[in-house]
Length: 270
Image (cartoon, rainbow, N blue to C red; front, top):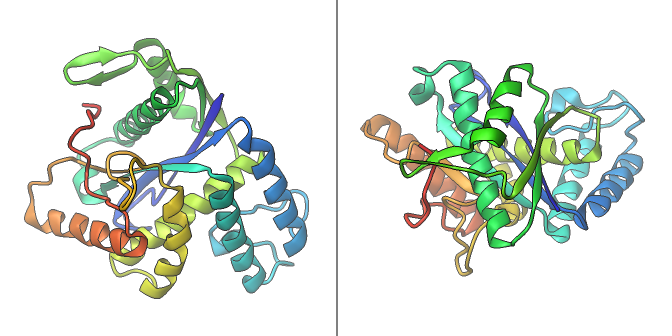
């Protein structure tokens, strides 16, 4: 049984130019290893029970120094890499998504990452659970995903043959949520740095191990575009917007040496 725990970041354009949704895929065997790693890192760096362990500096407890918080996040990403956890991330430019309601934007993000997760499960002949960070507006859409599936290639495709359960979780309800927040926050920093907000040097240091988490196929280079890294829309018609996607892909490819271009062989939700 696999578990996919997902959340959002860069919720509005004041936080970054791309809306980002994604999370981590854990196998059943990896869950106790991640739990133990987070437990040990929290203890080592002075996090107390009830303290948030998140990527954002503002969430740092007062007794944990900035350097300790930075090292804790770095150590966690390295542990996730060693354990073999996979990451799936979806991005869309805020300027393109402005004609969508918040609910529509979230629904499409959920459809896209659910479909990617379903493909991962299908490739590995595995069953899975999917849990998103608590969002009271998404109950009905999670039920719709389970009952009706996703429109792909002009057909409604069921995904409950692999994803057996859709649910919600919340911060501090498990160490898996901390792992997701740190990994997704690290990706957010790198995406924002690609657009000129943040240090390119720091982003390169962060993304080198983080990129190994991105689910991909093949090697030399690993194909993550269309798999663990999904940029939408597939076709960006406005040149000014296409430049920003190109900047993001160029930076992430440089940080990771992976192929982040869309995989044309993969069907995507409509």
